[in-house]
Length: 193
Ligand SMILES: *[C@@H]1O[C@H](CO)[C@@H](O)[C@H](O)[C@H]1NC(C)=O
Ligand SMILES: *[C@@H]1O[C@H](CO)[C@@H](O)[C@H](O)[C@H]1NC(C)=O
Image 1 (cartoon, rainbow, N blue to C red):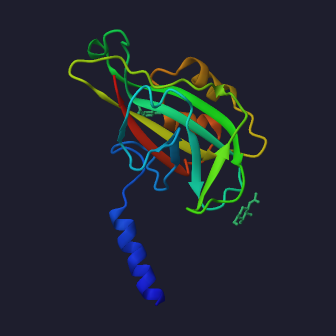
Image 2 (cartoon, rainbow, N blue to C red):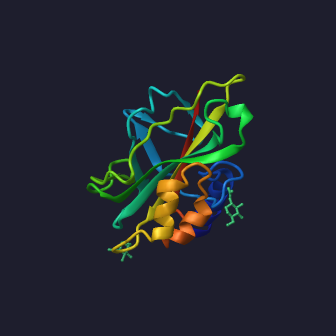
């Protein structure tokens, strides 16, 4: 019985893909539940509208969540030229970083534990608002969740990135500067301008 379970677990692992977009590093295997109003991002790359994503989503993870967490939203498909995107270079843009997320209670029937925070930063909610482009250009809005270190004080180099380097944001460099481990959960949705 045990062997069968292991085999099916392996098969399952084989078909389930990363929760981060192709080519993005670090690769994250666990799904972050991201829900705008009542609309859940069921699979990575799900198309959403600007109107649907205008308000901050609810997030959650599977299983117990007894830590404190940091959530980040980045656009992988911004341009260094917002007014005329095709005239610029592709660039990552940092939208939001909120800290101090904790479980609100026990996991619900589907095994998901909702996480909430009263923090409004270090980078307040900034909704997806990609500019119109011809041809239309889907932007991959990528959500990352980290375990927040105990008594986390954001080092000044990391804070500089958050406040002054939002365009051209480099997640790998931020992880190092901020003293974080790799993200534990991720998900992404697409919005087209
Ligand atoms: C969280 O839960 C895990 C597994 O249940 C346990 O090993 C760990 O010690 C807990 N951590 C805290 C900070 O309570
Ligand atoms: C982030 O910076 C590192 C060097 O510190 C570089 O190797 C990597 O390509 C950069 N990532 C992106 C997405 O630009």
